[in-house]
Amino acid sequence: MKRIAQFLKVSPHIFEEAMGEGFPQYTAEEIQEMYQQLRLPRRATRGSAGYDFCAPFSFTLAPGETIKIPTGIRVRMEEGWVLKLYPRSGLGFKYRLQMDNTVGIIDSDYFDSDNEGHIFIKMTNDSRQGKTVELAWGTGFAQGIFLEYGITVDDEAEGERNGGFGSTTEK
Image 1: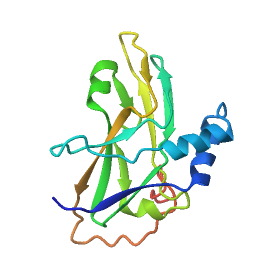
Image 2: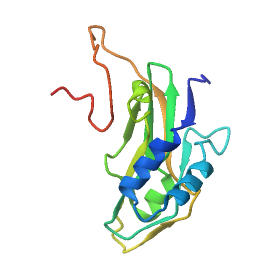
Image 3: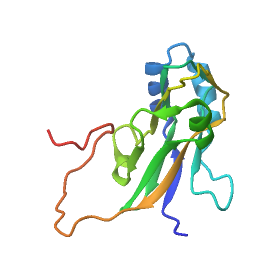
Image 4: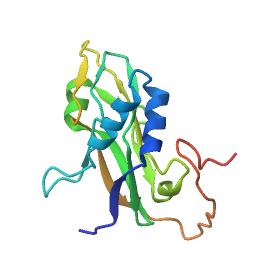
């Protein structure tokens, strides 16, 4: 297998800023503690394709509720590779926990964005059986898989990224 990437934490101030914007109920001290306890994604077994992303804090999602999770994680990877993000299989199967963009795409050039390539994962509990999802801190909730990709023979893309969530779309 090719070793093409490395997970890292974003800097403390980037994580604190994201948590402060989305989760004002946490104090600065609680956010610092969360940052210290962030777990880098890892595979569970030698045969696993997916790297598990763990919840940086406990959360509950009632049916129909959505959450945008600042993971505190960034990834450096070789050009020609992409990290695709999906919900953990069991959570999707049991609760219909779904990513709002269906599949998250993390490009190799996202790492150098102003936000340090901070990976956010937005999910919705789409349960049709009224099931509430409760995830404790450190529980795997999403998985990332690295895939190599190709480009067309006449590709001439030269744009530069600075951001995520649609930042490469031409205006």
